[in-house]
Length: 481
Ligand code: FCB
Image (cartoon, rainbow, N blue to C red; front, side, top):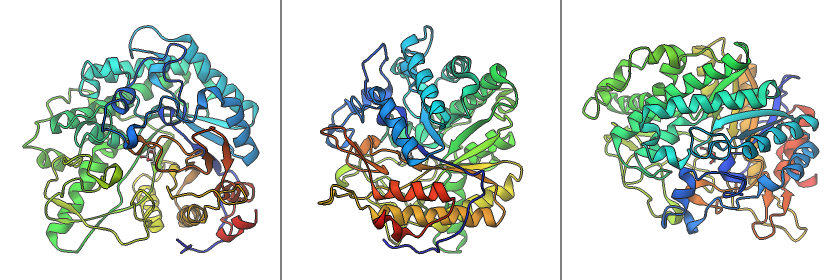
């Protein structure tokens, strides 16, 4: 691709620049120091679930290479590191005894980051539920929400005020709908009722955990949640296409924004899903619990959707590894009559369309709707087919262009009034991209999967200069860095 947006826009001086990873995608050491199995261990070890049968057993061995990895971030001048805690590493069965070795690992990581001048941004849940809890129903079981809060409380006690920003959940949309409806993610369940129960218990878990953290560390403690809000366009202005867009927004976005930020599920949600469930699993007081004043709303953004009235086509929106469809089930519960229309290019190696304007629109819409709520881009980035050049470097101009255009989008949204406080590139490293295994590379730092050697790509060098200057530099300068 080439850039489509201008260079030169500046960011506020106190804008926070970081990179992001998630435990199961980078840590490895899956059976070390008392870590229990998670649903992703089980899922990735089940034949046919991931491309090439890849697992996170070794991943990029971040667990053993924390010192080296923090040094890489420091050398790039990064100011913050968004990582997730593996629940089964610190509490092997998700209830009862905590594992001191696991708690110590994250405590050391936090100390190393702070010593390097990097702010720790901690996500409690990036999809790796302890398998023992899944055996009891996982997120379909209300008890999981309460256990999640206990785990959050313990983390707050151990890591304390060394953490710059806490995040309860990463993309509960994926946990609920890819995990329990389409089944392309762990635990691989395909049951619409289960997915909606999971939605509610994730919401409840968010509220309970946010309260637990603030209970331990004080009400002003910065707490956030990260959502993958779906920027959805209607294919036409026909009422049925606008209704298709509305349904996707309700089941994809409002189902989380409503309870977490406004204290209610939208009425349409209940009518849209009336043939599936009566939502009687929502108990008195839950909505009060779920709505907690947040210090930041985390936004993960990659691409956009276009929809019309029609029929959900097998595997729409979720092409599986190797081009075959992983699931014939829609993740869009209650929206079988919505068709996803192919988007014009360019596309990334995930097949996701590249539309930076969607990020401007999303940020401004959120700002208008929640004026007092600061925003942060907690993930943005792209998979491309990288090649190592004869000079040993990765000239990933496509990725530089993608980052350039999306950073310009963020800067433009800020200029237009959006209160965006930070940006975290996904990802610091190439890593285990869930069902796609190691096949899709999102890193700004390349990982050689034979030697585990790390090599900053041109995108990392370019991003480092952006961080240093707080300016959207010309994408072409990367080649010369
Ligand atoms: C997001 C996930 C993250 C990564 C990117 C590409 O949905 O939060 O772990 O897989 O997509």
